[in-house]
Image (cartoon, rainbow over all chains, first blue to last red; front, side, top):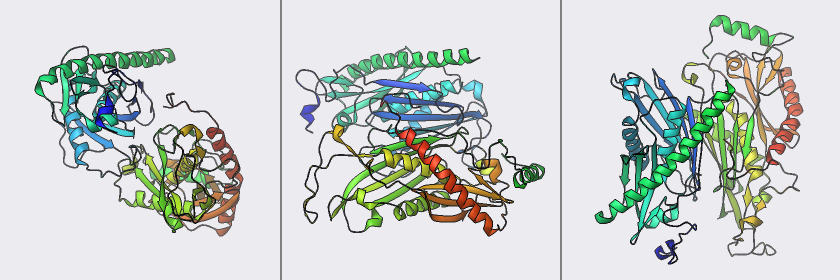
Length: 246
Length: 292
C-alpha cells in the first residue's frame, strides 16, 4: 500500500475513521478470577491484550534470585508474552526480544509513578501481559490493560493511566493508529493520568517535527480522556456486579 | 498444594480401595468442569480457549500457509509455550513433540492437499496462560496438561477456516501456485462437515490400586501409582499409549489388567467428550462479544 492512500483527500483513513476518531474500544475486568488476583482484557480495534496481575505478595514467583525487596515500595516484575500467532504473519519472537524489554522498562517506570508506593513496601507485584492479536498500538494496549488489572487486584493507584498512539500524516495528526498506519508514519504513544494533562508515559521511536509535537500531544490527551471514561464505566459496571453478589 | 505424609496416605487409601472416593467427590470416569470458546482470534485460521475452574487455561491457534512439499510429516508443526517455563524446557519440548507426533500419525492429509505439489502447512501454537502458584514446590508435574491441550487443539482444528480455492484442481500435476478468493465470507472449513475424519484427542488417566481415574486433579496426582496417556480417534484407541510421569514422587509398577481397564474407560468416555466439544463448536461466537 502506498503511503499516500493512508489518508484520502476527503479526510478518511484506511479503516474509514476521521483523523480524530478512536478505534472501537472494549475492555473487561476480572476475566480470570481464579488464575490471578487481578485480570483484564482490552480490545482496541483488532488488537487484543490480556493482563494478569499477581500481588501484592511477599515473594514474587518471577523474582530473580537475589533480588531484594524494596522497603520504599513494591518490586514490579513485568513479563510480556508475544505468541507467534499474534501478528498477521506468523513470527516467533525470542523471550528476550529487545523491543519488548524496552517496553517493559517504560511501563514499569510509568506504573511506579502511578501506584501509591508507601502502601506496598517490601512486596512484589507480578504483571503478566499476553498479546492475542496485534494491529497497532502495542504500548497503548499494554498500558490500558495494566491499569485495569491493577484496579481489579485492588492495588491503590493515584488515578487511571490511559494511553493512546498519535501519528502524523503530512500536516494532519491521526489518533489511535492501526498497524498499516504505524508501518508508514511516525507516531508517538502517550499515557495520561486521569482527567489531568499530566503525562506519565511517552514513547516516540521515529522522527517527528518538533513544531507538530504539541498538536499531536493535545489530540492524544483528548483521546486518552475519552478512553479513561470508557475504562471507568467498565470498572463501575464490574463494581456494581460485585456489590449485587454480596 | 504441598501434602504431608499423613494427607498423602489418607488420599491414597480413599482412592485405592474398592469403593474409591475422590478428593472432589467425582466419579472415577468424571471430568472436572471445563469451559471453552472457539474462533475468537480474528487473524488466525482457527483458535480456541479451554479453561478449567482452578485457573489453568490453554489458548490454541491454528495458522495455515501454502507450501510446496512432498514430505507430509512437515505439514503440521506444534509449538507449546507454558507460562513461566523456558521455551527449551523439558516440559514444553516433550509436550510439543507428543502432540505433534500424535497429530501427524492420525491425520487425514487429504484435507491439506491443494494439488500434487502444493499443500497447506499448519502451525498449531499452544499457550498455557497460567500455572498453579504452588507448582514450583509441589511434586506434581504438568503432563496432565496433555488432555487439556489436545481438547484445545481439537477445537482449534475443527473451527479452522481456509479461504476458498479459486484455481483449478482438475490437473493435479499443475505447476502454478494455487490462488484463493479474497472474500472471507466464502471461506470453507479445514475439516469439512461431511468428512469422517476427526482430529485425535489424548486422555490422561491415573492408575491407583485397582482403579482408573479420569482427569486426575493436582492433589490426586501426588499419590497416584502411575499415569497413562491414551490417544482416541474416531471411536478407536490410537497411539500414543504411554506412561507419563504425573508426579516426581516414586511410582509403582501396575498390573497389566489395569491397562486393559484404562483402555476400556477411555473408549467409554471418548464419545461423550467428542459430543460435548462438537456442541461448543456449534455455539455462535460474536467477534466483539464477551468471551472473557
